[in-house]
Image (cartoon, rainbow, N blue to C red; front, side, top):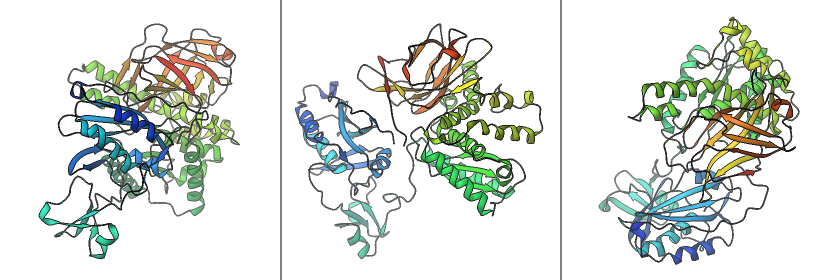
Length: 520
């Protein structure tokens, strides 16, 4: 979880006016904001209803959307302040933020059109039931289905028909009468907030089972313990907020040098590979690379899929999108792993030892350097190994993060510098660009035309940047590269903190702001 090191000022609530809400008195929302923001509020431990929630006010039932990410943040002890309330058509968007400026949205839907009663009572009731605010709540009632003998949350969206209900004061009372918990209301498997997450999870588990038919799980406890220990270290010190996957690190028995990320947190490595990785740095590089793949390149959908769904997409655009996406996945995983070494997670480890892992894999493949290609990219293993040479590539930790805000102070983009590479022409700077969900378009595509940004280091050196193509989807991170304006930029760039970093050709951004954050 990211936490700001600086005290953040409270952002005043903004209430947007929509045609459906015209003429309504919204003063109650301002009063609600003032009362809620007397302190940061935790999520009620007893609140269980995600993501669909039925809010009942005076026998009127309203639908609400509660993001699953709130469950994870609440379980981690995060607290929230009310940032913004926006009315739109028949709904109210309630936006909250943590002390570290992590933001979540709750949506409450009125019955066809916003009413004064909904604004005055339903929004406050929602906050009262979700957060520790407004006094204690009675135990959540349970509703049993008399035939199946399952009991449900009284606020769920799939209650049995009226003549098959039996109401209980709480779970204990329901179970005393022989009822069992509904597997949907009390799910043992949590679906993360990614499109078709369970489908990804099933595919990953299926791939694992197929691998185990060829390569059984290794029985060497020492090798397994080494992988588990180093894998947990990478996760515990990962420089970005983790997606919430349940990571498993599995050692498979094979003389082949095998490692891979199967998705949704399943990372495998062969005992053959572990036996030839002589230093912890080599193992850490492989694990950080595979974790980077998992965190950046699985959910949600890649830009390629988004473009494929767009009937107006030209075939050449789709081809460009696929090439641009696939060509950078291996490189992005390498650079993010190197940035992990540059941060606090790599303290005590010599990154120069890590590159040997790539060289060993290259030797085992038995191909020449120029012929080894991954992910349809033009960079072979020889190019990847050069990134470990500080005379060729200067890696950076991912602090600070530069946030691009729009005119309403909503974060549209987050930009982090990964490092700078010495090339034949002008140096190339690599960034990790995160596209937030504050977007009006399903994907972002930018083609560079001349200067597209700048970077200022701690010594005041300014690098003018010319961007390559950018393709991103809201909620994802993507690799962005830019060329600089001078051959001397590689040597002039100071290794200390960056002072300014901004891109000029991203829609909606009014200002960039540096924010220093701690790891999860």
